[in-house]
Length: 266
Image 1 (cartoon, rainbow, N blue to C red):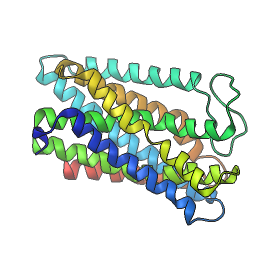
Image 2: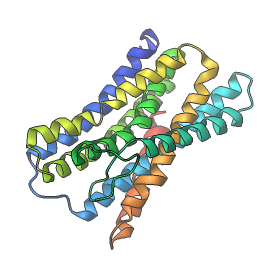
Image 3: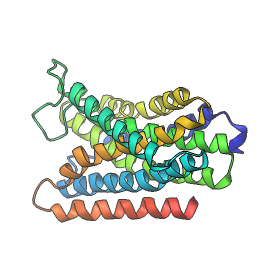
Image 4: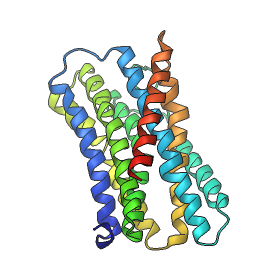
């Protein structure tokens, strides 16, 4: 069925699901009173990190190498090159985009007069850019190839990213409520932090077009961007506080879930 869909439409469906999961997570603000316990926050962050590490390997780098070799290229060259470029791209965004992590009073990025609430949203937006690219490319690849296992792998990636997007949506809407925003505004801003996923996914597919030689580079690019987010943001935040083993368990569980999803469905 997927090979009958246009790659852009396929990418929109996949990233639309992950955006919906972010919005559902943000809706927790209507039912949850108080703050998320630090241990739960560490588990969520660790889980997101584990999912993204496993997705980078099984859903992005391995397919990038396989696709490059099928096209007669040396597999590791686009995989390594795209990986480095993706990491550098996120590093550049991290230094340019003003953002503020929940629980922190020190903004990062370029000096700005933006409000704290806006910078809190930007912090999560940074995480969502590579996720949107990854899911969009996977569904576009499935649409181009038409193979059932390729579509299953794209579905597995969307489910994995969607699962970690749910607590991510709550992790932005609840701090926004703490900053004094109403439940409705906290929900809207939390949900909108995930809108970059369908935007990023669709734009990436449009850039790639139907030029197959570019796909291995873009898959690896998304992997490099995701690993940068994991190492720079998620893992350090998951190990803040006294109970650092909680974050470690979250990372391992997230990795396990994404690995099983990808191998079982892909």
